[in-house]
Image (cartoon, rainbow, N blue to C red; front, top):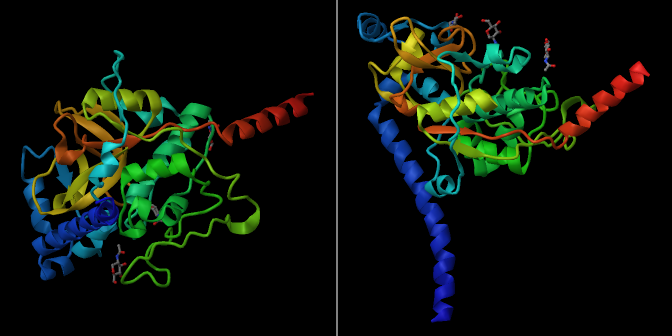
Amino acid sequence: MAKKMAPTTGFFLPSLLLLGLLSCFHLQVVASKSASLGKLESDILQESIIKSVNNNPKAGWKASMNDRFSNYTVSQFKHLLGVKPTPLGELQSVPVKIHSERLNLPSQFDARTAWPKCRTIGKYLYQGHCGSCWAFAAVESLSDRFCIQFDMNISLSVNDLLACCGFMCGDGCDGGYPIAAWRYFKRSGVVTDECDPYFDQTGCSHPGCEPAYPTPKCKKQCVGGNLLWKKSKHFSVSAYKVQSDPSNIMAEVYKNGPVEVAFTVYEDFAHYKSGVYKHITGEEMGGHAVKLIGWGTSDEGEDYWLMANQWNRSWGDDGYFKIRRGTNECGIEEEVVAGLPSSKNVVKEITNINDAFLDASA
Ligand SMILES: *[C@@H]1O[C@H](CO)[C@@H](O)[C@H](O)[C@H]1NC(C)=O
Ligand SMILES: *[C@@H]1O[C@H](CO)[C@@H](O)[C@H](O)[C@H]1NC(C)=O
Ligand SMILES: *[C@@H]1O[C@H](CO)[C@@H](O)[C@H](O)[C@H]1NC(C)=O
């Protein structure tokens, strides 16, 4: 009996994994089937969508032909939406952050003005042609949190996470899991952007870019050779999901800084220009991750979240957007993840700075 059991359990676990993989494939197949081949090759930007949003008095937002996607097909646009559904097992072991204390939360909040000395919060982000949103939103939020917690300007490396986290995070430029990014920060740390800069800053003009956008290779070496990979690592002490209640999400951002959020993107979102977004028209395109940096209420009385996208400034409201708050619009309040920065390796920098300062003043 015992002899029989062993191979059974041995088989059981891999086959569960396999089942997980198969169901991911299954989802993808269903998703691409829903958009016909002709549709995938058509332009993402459509006059008909702009009309139906701009002529809808209840929309609350304006649509336009965003320059950013003027030459994009539906298929290219979908490739930017790199959030994969997190495997159930992964989610179940994630701690959930609940803020039970009563905070006097302001009705309007913008992390850029709350922490004006932290320049990464308002940095314009650009993921290029790679489905790296899951990595961008995570790395950028952690950079902001280092500044908020330790009073230091630091840009962390999207490339490190994208290239070196491997299958634990998903599939690099073909999408990943937001929570796995934060677990990587805790487990392996993340180097600075100076050590390992983002590979796709030049957009799709570099060789080997078409038709696939390959994930960069993990080199574990700083460019230029002036910095050490290991010393350049910055860690988080935690990786958690923020409980979905809007006031709980607000408390988290108010206390600890920007968070990473995942949501579902529909065709109309590619056309967003200004106002408070809500889904009006168009098919589902995929999952996307962005940085949530604040909230407020519009002149029309609509509550919104303030978000930094990473499609550069020629998309949306100078790279930013607002989305309806409090109704879980497009799942925006469902998958909110973050972590707190660790003083490991940072304490040394701060001590060094203090030493230099003391030396200089002595
Ligand atoms: C779109 O493509 C055309 C021709 O390929 C090019 O001339 C134009 O500059 C492109 N537009 C943008 C905004 O990239
Ligand atoms: C970050 O850099 C900016 C200048 O680029 C500076 O004004 C700001 O004080 C710095 N912040 C911190 C926390 O050192
Ligand atoms: C982002 O947009 C700015 C202003 O539109 C532009 O100057 C810059 O080249 C863009 N960055 C990238 C990486 O495309």
